[in-house]
Length: 327
Length: 262
Image (cartoon, rainbow over all chains, first blue to last red; front, top):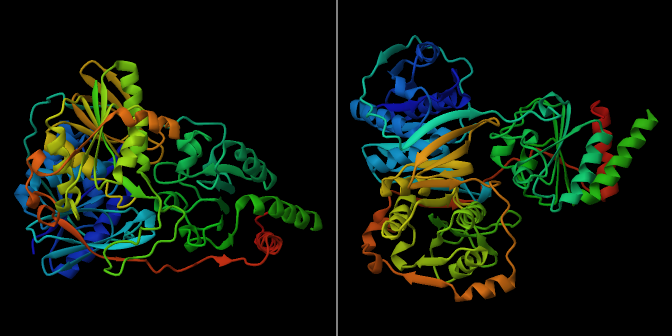
């Protein structure tokens, strides 16, 4: 089988974690299918990143072009489609990230090849590719079979394919030439926008109380805020609370928000979507309180209580205060 | 400013128990409530607001059986001007590509400056249709959009990236945007509002009326297919503290205290 081509992801001169996960995923698949893995690095002045990649994977191909300075899918698509034509990979792997969302369906459409997105598992049986992915917010899994094709495109979920601990390779770096058409002005990058820093930096707190969809009314935010401060914690949240503007964006934990490493994380009424869980790094104690016994949070939490959070909070607060006074 | 919004009717499953059907390729949904896909609701609201501000029209398009009319009527009550529903047995089991093809076939003959879809659908979460649609319509696209500002024949959007970062892009119109939740606060729709919107046009079309053959959609027109659905076996890592609220809270407080966490 022809090679597996991994698209490296980088922003601001740093390779994204997903890149290493893509390489690990590609290596496993390549072993299964008996083929090689190459990493495609598209950008401008990316020599240093190429060196980093070559220390982990055997074959790095660089497309260095002024027009690839920022990730804009139109120019990336042009470059990638030409690179694909040159190398004829059997599979192209990208991250199910802001970049992958923008680029993968566009490339798949232009090449008329099968696309599976947000994969948590990938298997080759002969030349046939099957993907495992989640539906209904993770409550159901599905196997998706691609129609036989010379070429497939898949995007993988962050965290689903752990990166190799200590990849080592003495890889070769080659360059590929592509022609990018003159700017047609259809799509232009203007600027990056940093999240405004608020009064609380949740990444610095040892104790985080986080709330989610289980909070149905804004007035109930006061109850959880009060609980958080009573145990010396700060209040954070999952996406639905941000969408309702009940807390500022800098309080969001998850892939599109902050990554936190507290000693104690208490999740109140948060189901535990992978996007949210991606923002909690291991090490500390995780408590989930949710009335849905099937909430995914219980699969990662250390302690769980299956109950209405508003019934639990006042009692829990009292019990903690009693214990504190008793000591 | 003519805006087309693609909407999908999906089962509401956030707080539901789900079972796989006997064929093992779908879920048993007869007892589930159906709603407009959450992302699409924000997309409709954004379109209505833009047209309220700039003039023009909002057309909502959906694919599915008669039950989808409920979702479309709701969109009309939110302020959309017209609805189109495409329905045909041949559309069953269409993948994102076939879905985008069918939507594109309808949209290409309509006047439009912007096409909105949700970032993804709550059921299959593929996040593919919007971008594929843009490719088929040969117009630029932007995904995960959290801000929109139209200026003449261009639109400036903010895309949500990782880690709290965003990026501003400028696109020439017409364009396809996939809308992220939280971009606005969707308005409340009353039963009275839906009744009032009954007078608005809801057109129904089948494949032959949009000049699409049955093998361009459905399994024949798709490049991927779901071969198996299953409930994932998960390791329940958490120690579930059972008993009354009083007992479970006492047990939790005790464990937190012993761990030196409170």
